[in-house]
Length: 438
Ligand SMILES: *[C@@H]1O[C@H](CO)[C@@H](O)[C@H](O)[C@H]1NC(C)=O
Ligand SMILES: *[C@@H]1O[C@H](CO)[C@@H](O)[C@H](O)[C@H]1NC(C)=O
Ligand SMILES: *[C@@H]1O[C@H](CO)[C@@H](O)[C@H](O)[C@H]1NC(C)=O
Ligand SMILES: *[C@@H]1O[C@H](CO)[C@@H](O)[C@H](O)[C@H]1NC(C)=O
Ligand SMILES: *[C@@H]1O[C@H](CO)[C@@H](O)[C@H](O)[C@H]1NC(C)=O
Ligand SMILES: [Zn+2]
Image 1: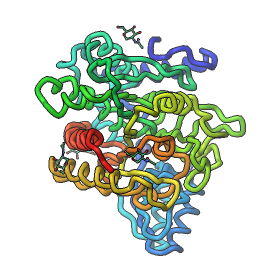
Image 2 (image 1 turned 120 degrees about the vertical axis):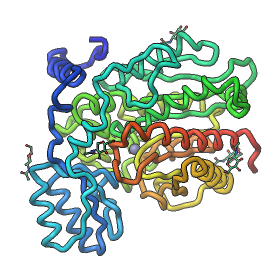
Image 3 (image 1 turned 180 degrees about the horizontal axis):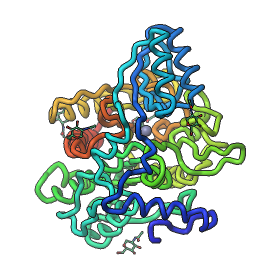
Image 4 (image 1 turned 135 degrees about the vertical axis):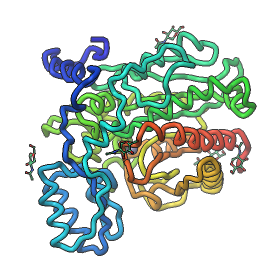
């Protein structure tokens, strides 16, 4: 099967995977993901006191729930919005526990399988060849995204070049699109990555949207023309290719990479805690089963190492690092690993302020913005901090829509409005780079 490029492990191990994939992609399938989310709920709790927070932590730990927000149990304290995906066999016990402990909760999603199937166009034929026919308002599988990239590399060679920066743990190509008008003159560059975290599907959808808009409006929009004439964009639509693929075939809510751990049966590390910047300190976990596991050593994940190598090699001309996540509606800048003000605070802050204002002008959607540590939470070993510390003066992480109504299951109908407004923010930041900032 073309989808599965030479995996490291034995082919036999992949046969069930192929089978599952066929089941999922089959038109007229009965249930996605083998119906594994039937009856699962997503519940929001905001602990009112530290005692409640402590009780929640203990309970979530005990039931091994899938935490949607924040990304780790350790972040939970008084006032933290916690969105948690509860498996059906635990929901009765947990909800009873909340009631008896007098902890207020709100059910965000009553039946996860229903929401997932209601929206999903997975399995319908959407893999159109030409740019004008390609459907950017649905989520695409890894195979679809990669063949789209190959296609652009062939048909838009004037503005686009594709290359690989290495291979993932399971042996998939780590593909990058370089977009910009070819020029012999020295060009500054912007790096954009999407999909570090597998389940945040709106990220890769935005990366595709960005490329589409650039190609479609290059001739008609003076701002876009200026961007592509003066800058090169390195775009990595799917950073965590193995994890993204796994989120299509096995577990819709998978976050990490798929590497094997020598110390545990749990797989994967958090590709946004694996960077060599205060690695594995606050906000990262040493336990391989945790969603924020930092990995056995910095850059242990081949995907992180490949991108870090690329950025190291090109850091002199890369002026901005932009990374796309979901969900929270935030625009974050360094530091993430500590409460401190960055040296270039005023330039970065005003770029963020204007970008958020531009974003809001489209559909009125509000984004919070600020240093990641104080706006979201402290996390060590993040790509954004690493980029900043390695000399890229503008480093941002977007947390796209929404604020928890659908969470990771942002419906496809919201791809267009989300990407349209985000596009304006990215253009605004990019134009800011081209100006001098003291
Ligand atoms: C729910 O099912 C899972 C997998 O079958 C099992 O590991 C877990 O212990 C069960 N939890 C409860 C509370 O019954
Ligand atoms: C399914 O989608 C329809 C239309 O988008 C919506 O009205 C309905 O509430 C959805 N049902 C569920 C269970 O999400
Ligand atoms: C992109 O296209 C060029 C020439 O058209 C080709 O040499 C190159 O191998 C292609 N990139 C990839 C990763 O296939
Ligand atoms: C950036 O956004 C600000 C605030 O909305 C706006 O005044 C400015 O014109 C925008 N710049 C560009 C180049 O889009
Ligand atoms: C701050 O910005 C200036 C000008 O853009 C740049 O030369 C310098 O390297 C930046 N410093 C840091 C720490 O990013
Ligand atoms: Zn993320």
